[in-house]
Length: 219
Image 1 (cartoon, rainbow, N blue to C red):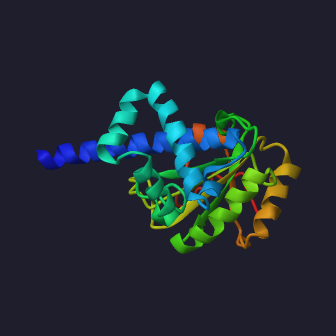
Image 2: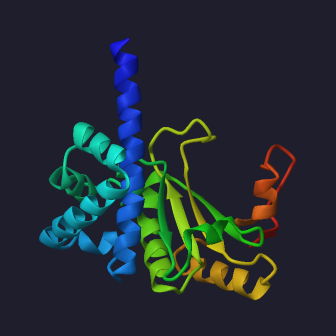
């Protein structure tokens, strides 16, 4: 019974940490200083975390208390970030996804019916290498509207040990833009053929299987 309760507490703490990390990341992006760039300055990272954690606590007091009780305060949170939690795919154990939106893009833009994404499946070490390139280009506004990468946190929906990076564009019908993003991905070393899946298929619950392909573009 104690083991079950511990697992539940840990799962809730991971969820709260993930929500705060997204909250913190968006706050820093609005200030023009994304979370991953703060890692080079520990004092600035902790100062920004303290300010944002206090604001987070005002909006989500129960989640804040869950983090405090199971993880700690900003010193402990920032230590996790410095070790790669929420930053490096293979070092992230508390969140299923690491997300980076382009500047000025609303997070819900990736859920628009016209949006779609390039799917890039990679081994863990490859994902660790490729993700920062895609993340940085997304933040610079030179790739798509958003990108996200899966992590090593156990996910029952995963089909194998590979990680996947999604690179979103706003309109699958804009072939020039879709293919511009694909060409940019090649400069990061992603030269093997990959597929582009429209949200239309995702919302319909259509997924690839033996003999069935659901990607709309392949390049």
